[in-house]
Image (cartoon, rainbow, N blue to C red):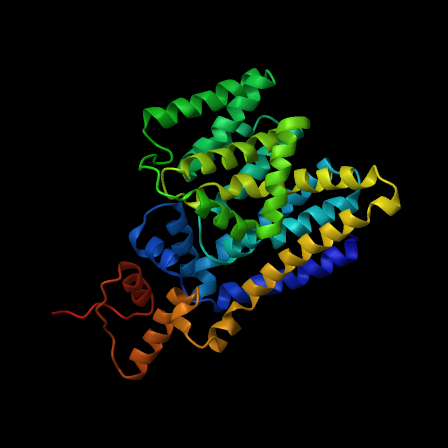
Length: 361
Protein backbone atom coordinates (compact mmCIF):
# COMPACT_ATOMS: atom_id res chain seq x y z
CA UNK A 1 0.00 0.00 0.00
CA UNK A 2 1.44 3.36 -1.02
CA UNK A 3 2.02 6.07 1.57
CA UNK A 4 -0.32 8.62 -0.04
CA UNK A 5 -3.19 6.12 -0.07
CA UNK A 6 -2.57 5.22 3.54
CA UNK A 7 -2.52 8.88 4.64
CA UNK A 8 -5.70 9.62 2.70
CA UNK A 9 -7.43 6.60 4.21
CA UNK A 10 -6.29 7.62 7.70
CA UNK A 11 -7.67 11.14 7.22
CA UNK A 12 -11.16 9.91 6.28
CA UNK A 13 -10.97 7.23 8.96
CA UNK A 14 -10.30 9.88 11.63
CA UNK A 15 -13.24 11.98 10.44
CA UNK A 16 -15.54 8.93 10.57
CA UNK A 17 -14.37 8.00 14.08
CA UNK A 18 -14.90 11.53 15.38
CA UNK A 19 -18.36 11.66 13.79
CA UNK A 20 -19.45 8.32 15.25
CA UNK A 21 -18.16 9.20 18.72
CA UNK A 22 -19.92 12.57 18.69
CA UNK A 23 -23.29 11.40 17.33
CA UNK A 24 -23.86 7.89 18.71
CA UNK A 25 -26.04 8.00 21.86
CA UNK A 26 -24.73 6.50 25.06
CA UNK A 27 -24.93 2.70 25.04
CA UNK A 28 -26.31 0.57 27.91
CA UNK A 29 -22.79 -0.66 28.69
CA UNK A 30 -21.37 2.86 28.77
CA UNK A 31 -24.20 4.17 30.96
CA UNK A 32 -23.73 1.42 33.53
CA UNK A 33 -19.97 2.06 33.67
CA UNK A 34 -20.53 5.80 34.07
CA UNK A 35 -22.97 5.56 36.99
CA UNK A 36 -22.35 2.18 38.60
CA UNK A 37 -18.60 1.64 38.30
CA UNK A 38 -15.56 3.12 39.99
CA UNK A 39 -12.85 1.65 37.74
CA UNK A 40 -10.37 3.39 35.45
CA UNK A 41 -12.80 3.28 32.51
CA UNK A 42 -15.39 5.22 34.50
CA UNK A 43 -12.72 7.67 35.64
CA UNK A 44 -11.73 8.46 32.05
CA UNK A 45 -15.38 8.90 31.07
CA UNK A 46 -16.04 11.34 33.90
CA UNK A 47 -12.82 13.24 33.24
CA UNK A 48 -13.63 13.62 29.55
CA UNK A 49 -17.19 14.65 30.39
CA UNK A 50 -15.89 17.43 32.65
CA UNK A 51 -13.87 18.92 29.78
CA UNK A 52 -16.09 18.32 26.76
CA UNK A 53 -19.91 18.16 26.84
CA UNK A 54 -21.96 15.58 25.01
CA UNK A 55 -21.21 12.09 23.78
CA UNK A 56 -17.80 13.08 22.43
CA UNK A 57 -16.57 14.06 25.89
CA UNK A 58 -17.43 10.62 27.29
CA UNK A 59 -15.33 8.98 24.59
CA UNK A 60 -12.52 11.43 23.91
CA UNK A 61 -9.88 9.51 25.89
CA UNK A 62 -10.87 6.24 24.25
CA UNK A 63 -10.53 7.82 20.81
CA UNK A 64 -7.06 8.90 21.90
CA UNK A 65 -6.21 5.37 23.04
CA UNK A 66 -7.44 4.06 19.70
CA UNK A 67 -5.15 6.34 17.70
CA UNK A 68 -2.21 5.63 20.01
CA UNK A 69 -2.82 1.94 19.37
CA UNK A 70 -2.68 2.55 15.62
CA UNK A 71 0.59 4.49 16.03
CA UNK A 72 2.18 1.74 18.14
CA UNK A 73 0.93 -0.88 15.69
CA UNK A 74 2.52 0.97 12.77
CA UNK A 75 5.85 1.20 14.62
CA UNK A 76 5.69 -2.52 15.34
CA UNK A 77 4.80 -3.29 11.71
CA UNK A 78 7.80 -1.25 10.55
CA UNK A 79 10.04 -3.63 12.49
CA UNK A 80 8.15 -6.70 11.34
CA UNK A 81 8.21 -5.98 7.59
CA UNK A 82 11.19 -5.00 5.48
CA UNK A 83 9.00 -3.11 3.00
CA UNK A 84 7.32 0.06 4.21
CA UNK A 85 4.35 -0.65 1.92
CA UNK A 86 3.64 -3.83 3.90
CA UNK A 87 3.71 -1.87 7.15
CA UNK A 88 1.16 0.58 5.72
CA UNK A 89 -1.09 -2.26 4.56
CA UNK A 90 -0.82 -4.08 7.90
CA UNK A 91 -1.76 -0.91 9.80
CA UNK A 92 -4.60 -0.17 7.38
CA UNK A 93 -6.08 -3.63 7.97
CA UNK A 94 -5.64 -3.25 11.73
CA UNK A 95 -7.45 0.07 11.97
CA UNK A 96 -10.32 -1.22 9.81
CA UNK A 97 -11.03 -4.15 12.10
CA UNK A 98 -14.59 -3.73 13.43
CA UNK A 99 -13.22 -4.32 16.94
CA UNK A 100 -10.88 -1.32 16.58
CA UNK A 101 -13.55 0.92 15.06
CA UNK A 102 -16.14 0.19 17.74
CA UNK A 103 -13.52 0.13 20.49
CA UNK A 104 -12.43 3.65 19.53
CA UNK A 105 -15.97 5.04 19.47
CA UNK A 106 -17.74 3.17 22.28
CA UNK A 107 -16.23 3.09 25.75
CA UNK A 108 -14.62 -0.20 26.78
CA UNK A 109 -11.56 -1.38 28.68
CA UNK A 110 -10.10 -3.26 25.69
CA UNK A 111 -9.00 -0.05 23.96
CA UNK A 112 -6.99 0.91 27.08
CA UNK A 113 -5.33 -2.50 27.26
CA UNK A 114 -4.48 -2.64 23.55
CA UNK A 115 -1.78 0.12 23.43
CA UNK A 116 -0.18 -1.32 26.57
CA UNK A 117 0.12 -4.77 24.96
CA UNK A 118 1.42 -3.28 21.71
CA UNK A 119 3.96 -1.14 23.55
CA UNK A 120 5.14 -4.16 25.54
CA UNK A 121 5.73 -6.25 22.41
CA UNK A 122 7.33 -3.31 20.58
CA UNK A 123 9.78 -2.56 23.41
CA UNK A 124 10.60 -6.23 23.83
CA UNK A 125 11.35 -6.56 20.12
CA UNK A 126 13.62 -3.50 20.37
CA UNK A 127 15.29 -5.00 23.47
CA UNK A 128 14.28 -1.97 25.57
CA UNK A 129 13.49 -3.89 28.74
CA UNK A 130 13.52 -1.19 31.42
CA UNK A 131 9.87 -0.16 30.99
CA UNK A 132 8.46 -3.67 30.63
CA UNK A 133 7.80 -4.26 34.38
CA UNK A 134 5.88 -0.97 34.57
CA UNK A 135 3.71 -1.94 31.58
CA UNK A 136 3.05 -5.31 33.20
CA UNK A 137 2.11 -3.55 36.43
CA UNK A 138 -0.31 -1.29 34.53
CA UNK A 139 -1.92 -4.30 32.84
CA UNK A 140 -2.22 -6.03 36.20
CA UNK A 141 -4.29 -3.19 37.66
CA UNK A 142 -6.20 -2.11 34.54
CA UNK A 143 -7.44 -5.47 33.26
CA UNK A 144 -8.27 -8.51 35.36
CA UNK A 145 -8.28 -10.65 32.22
CA UNK A 146 -4.61 -9.74 31.64
CA UNK A 147 -3.85 -13.01 33.41
CA UNK A 148 -4.05 -14.41 29.85
CA UNK A 149 -1.23 -12.07 28.83
CA UNK A 150 0.97 -13.14 31.74
CA UNK A 151 0.39 -16.83 31.04
CA UNK A 152 1.41 -16.29 27.39
CA UNK A 153 4.52 -14.31 28.36
CA UNK A 154 5.50 -16.94 30.94
CA UNK A 155 5.19 -19.76 28.39
CA UNK A 156 7.26 -17.76 25.90
CA UNK A 157 9.88 -16.94 28.52
CA UNK A 158 10.23 -20.57 29.62
CA UNK A 159 10.42 -22.01 26.10
CA UNK A 160 12.85 -19.36 24.87
CA UNK A 161 14.84 -19.41 28.13
CA UNK A 162 14.30 -15.74 28.91
CA UNK A 163 14.84 -15.83 32.68
CA UNK A 164 13.90 -12.22 33.43
CA UNK A 165 10.67 -12.43 31.45
CA UNK A 166 9.77 -15.75 33.09
CA UNK A 167 10.38 -14.46 36.61
CA UNK A 168 8.47 -11.19 36.14
CA UNK A 169 5.47 -12.79 34.45
CA UNK A 170 5.47 -15.63 36.99
CA UNK A 171 5.44 -13.11 39.84
CA UNK A 172 2.35 -11.40 38.43
CA UNK A 173 0.63 -14.76 37.96
CA UNK A 174 1.27 -15.59 41.61
CA UNK A 175 -0.17 -12.18 42.54
CA UNK A 176 -3.29 -12.94 40.48
CA UNK A 177 -3.74 -16.25 42.30
CA UNK A 178 -3.04 -14.75 45.74
CA UNK A 179 -5.52 -11.90 45.23
CA UNK A 180 -8.06 -14.22 43.57
CA UNK A 181 -8.18 -11.95 40.53
CA UNK A 182 -8.61 -12.86 36.91
CA UNK A 183 -11.33 -14.34 34.73
CA UNK A 184 -14.16 -16.05 36.58
CA UNK A 185 -14.33 -19.71 35.63
CA UNK A 186 -17.42 -21.78 36.24
CA UNK A 187 -20.65 -23.06 34.82
CA UNK A 188 -21.31 -26.22 32.91
CA UNK A 189 -21.29 -27.16 29.22
CA UNK A 190 -23.96 -24.87 27.81
CA UNK A 191 -23.35 -24.31 24.11
CA UNK A 192 -21.36 -21.07 24.07
CA UNK A 193 -18.60 -22.58 21.91
CA UNK A 194 -20.32 -21.54 18.67
CA UNK A 195 -21.12 -18.13 20.15
CA UNK A 196 -17.45 -17.26 20.61
CA UNK A 197 -16.85 -17.78 16.90
CA UNK A 198 -19.62 -15.29 16.17
CA UNK A 199 -18.03 -12.78 18.54
CA UNK A 200 -14.64 -13.17 16.88
CA UNK A 201 -16.28 -12.80 13.48
CA UNK A 202 -17.72 -9.49 14.72
CA UNK A 203 -14.32 -8.32 15.99
CA UNK A 204 -12.36 -9.27 12.86
CA UNK A 205 -15.10 -9.57 10.20
CA UNK A 206 -15.95 -13.17 9.22
CA UNK A 207 -13.39 -13.88 6.49
CA UNK A 208 -10.55 -12.12 8.29
CA UNK A 209 -11.25 -14.23 11.37
CA UNK A 210 -11.12 -17.43 9.31
CA UNK A 211 -7.68 -16.44 8.05
CA UNK A 212 -6.62 -15.47 11.58
CA UNK A 213 -7.65 -18.92 12.81
CA UNK A 214 -5.77 -20.58 9.95
CA UNK A 215 -2.67 -18.47 10.67
CA UNK A 216 -2.63 -19.43 14.35
CA UNK A 217 -2.97 -23.11 13.43
CA UNK A 218 -0.37 -22.95 10.65
CA UNK A 219 2.22 -21.30 12.88
CA UNK A 220 1.48 -23.82 15.66
CA UNK A 221 2.37 -26.67 13.32
CA UNK A 222 5.09 -25.35 11.05
CA UNK A 223 6.27 -21.78 11.57
CA UNK A 224 8.57 -19.83 13.88
CA UNK A 225 6.72 -18.78 17.03
CA UNK A 226 7.23 -15.21 18.23
CA UNK A 227 6.03 -13.46 21.38
CA UNK A 228 3.24 -11.95 19.28
CA UNK A 229 2.01 -15.42 18.33
CA UNK A 230 2.18 -16.72 21.92
CA UNK A 231 0.00 -13.84 23.14
CA UNK A 232 -2.60 -14.17 20.38
CA UNK A 233 -2.71 -17.96 20.38
CA UNK A 234 -2.98 -18.21 24.18
CA UNK A 235 -5.90 -15.77 24.20
CA UNK A 236 -7.62 -17.66 21.38
CA UNK A 237 -7.10 -21.05 23.04
CA UNK A 238 -8.31 -19.89 26.46
CA UNK A 239 -11.40 -18.23 25.00
CA UNK A 240 -12.36 -21.37 23.10
CA UNK A 241 -11.80 -23.62 26.11
CA UNK A 242 -13.75 -21.36 28.48
CA UNK A 243 -16.61 -20.99 26.00
CA UNK A 244 -17.40 -24.70 26.41
CA UNK A 245 -18.58 -24.05 29.98
CA UNK A 246 -19.51 -20.38 30.16
CA UNK A 247 -20.37 -17.24 28.23
CA UNK A 248 -17.16 -15.40 27.34
CA UNK A 249 -16.74 -11.62 27.31
CA UNK A 250 -14.99 -10.75 24.06
CA UNK A 251 -13.43 -7.62 25.58
CA UNK A 252 -11.37 -9.93 27.81
CA UNK A 253 -9.63 -11.45 24.79
CA UNK A 254 -9.89 -8.93 21.93
CA UNK A 255 -6.80 -6.85 22.87
CA UNK A 256 -4.61 -9.95 22.66
CA UNK A 257 -5.89 -11.41 19.39
CA UNK A 258 -6.27 -8.26 17.26
CA UNK A 259 -2.52 -7.62 17.35
CA UNK A 260 -1.91 -10.70 15.15
CA UNK A 261 -2.41 -8.88 11.83
CA UNK A 262 1.36 -8.84 11.00
CA UNK A 263 1.46 -12.62 11.40
CA UNK A 264 -1.44 -13.00 8.98
CA UNK A 265 -0.04 -10.62 6.38
CA UNK A 266 3.45 -12.11 6.65
CA UNK A 267 2.08 -15.61 6.05
CA UNK A 268 0.12 -14.36 3.05
CA UNK A 269 3.15 -12.56 1.59
CA UNK A 270 5.36 -15.63 1.92
CA UNK A 271 2.69 -17.78 0.30
CA UNK A 272 2.38 -15.40 -2.67
CA UNK A 273 5.93 -14.20 -3.26
CA UNK A 274 7.47 -17.65 -3.56
CA UNK A 275 5.25 -18.33 -6.58
CA UNK A 276 5.50 -17.19 -10.17
CA UNK A 277 3.04 -14.44 -11.20
CA UNK A 278 0.79 -16.82 -13.14
CA UNK A 279 0.30 -18.89 -9.96
CA UNK A 280 -0.45 -15.89 -7.75
CA UNK A 281 -3.88 -15.15 -9.20
CA UNK A 282 -5.97 -17.22 -6.80
CA UNK A 283 -4.08 -15.79 -3.82
CA UNK A 284 -4.64 -12.24 -5.06
CA UNK A 285 -8.31 -13.00 -5.66
CA UNK A 286 -8.66 -14.41 -2.14
CA UNK A 287 -6.99 -11.32 -0.70
CA UNK A 288 -9.38 -9.03 -2.56
CA UNK A 289 -12.40 -11.00 -1.35
CA UNK A 290 -11.22 -10.88 2.28
CA UNK A 291 -10.43 -7.17 2.11
CA UNK A 292 -13.79 -6.46 0.46
CA UNK A 293 -15.57 -8.23 3.32
CA UNK A 294 -13.58 -6.17 5.83
CA UNK A 295 -14.37 -2.88 4.11
CA UNK A 296 -18.04 -3.88 3.88
CA UNK A 297 -18.13 -4.61 7.62
CA UNK A 298 -16.66 -1.19 8.37
CA UNK A 299 -19.11 0.57 6.05
CA UNK A 300 -21.98 -1.14 7.87
CA UNK A 301 -20.64 0.24 11.16
CA UNK A 302 -20.22 3.74 9.76
CA UNK A 303 -23.68 3.73 8.15
CA UNK A 304 -25.62 2.00 10.91
CA UNK A 305 -27.13 5.29 12.09
CA UNK A 306 -28.81 5.81 8.74
CA UNK A 307 -29.91 2.15 8.74
CA UNK A 308 -31.69 2.70 12.06
CA UNK A 309 -33.91 5.37 10.50
CA UNK A 310 -34.61 3.27 7.41
CA UNK A 311 -35.34 -0.11 9.04
CA UNK A 312 -39.07 -0.89 9.26
CA UNK A 313 -39.09 -2.28 12.80
CA UNK A 314 -36.42 -0.59 14.98
CA UNK A 315 -37.05 -3.10 17.77
CA UNK A 316 -35.39 -5.79 15.66
CA UNK A 317 -32.35 -3.62 14.93
CA UNK A 318 -29.17 -4.39 16.85
CA UNK A 319 -28.70 -0.80 18.06
CA UNK A 320 -32.25 -0.41 19.35
CA UNK A 321 -30.94 -0.55 22.93
CA UNK A 322 -28.80 2.52 22.16
CA UNK A 323 -31.35 4.65 20.31
CA UNK A 324 -34.59 3.76 22.08
CA UNK A 325 -33.71 5.54 25.38
CA UNK A 326 -32.33 8.50 23.40
CA UNK A 327 -35.56 9.04 21.45
CA UNK A 328 -37.65 8.24 24.52
CA UNK A 329 -35.86 10.95 26.51
CA UNK A 330 -36.43 13.49 23.72
CA UNK A 331 -40.11 12.55 23.56
CA UNK A 332 -40.56 12.86 27.34
CA UNK A 333 -38.81 16.23 27.45
CA UNK A 334 -41.00 17.51 24.60
CA UNK A 335 -44.02 16.65 26.76
CA UNK A 336 -42.50 18.33 29.82
CA UNK A 337 -41.95 15.02 31.62
CA UNK A 338 -38.68 14.63 33.53
CA UNK A 339 -39.10 11.19 35.08
CA UNK A 340 -39.64 7.61 33.93
CA UNK A 341 -39.78 4.29 35.78
CA UNK A 342 -38.25 1.26 34.11
CA UNK A 343 -37.28 -2.19 35.31
CA UNK A 344 -34.33 -2.27 32.94
CA UNK A 345 -31.33 -1.20 35.03
CA UNK A 346 -29.11 -0.19 32.11
CA UNK A 347 -31.91 1.73 30.43
CA UNK A 348 -32.45 3.56 33.70
CA UNK A 349 -28.80 4.65 33.65
CA UNK A 350 -29.17 5.77 30.03
CA UNK A 351 -32.21 7.88 30.89
CA UNK A 352 -30.32 9.29 33.85
CA UNK A 353 -27.66 10.57 31.45
CA UNK A 354 -30.43 12.45 29.61
CA UNK A 355 -31.65 13.86 32.97
CA UNK A 356 -34.71 11.61 33.06
CA UNK A 357 -34.74 10.23 36.60
CA UNK A 358 -36.98 7.56 38.17
CA UNK A 359 -40.32 8.95 39.31
CA UNK A 360 -40.70 9.26 43.08
CA UNK A 361 -43.62 7.31 44.52
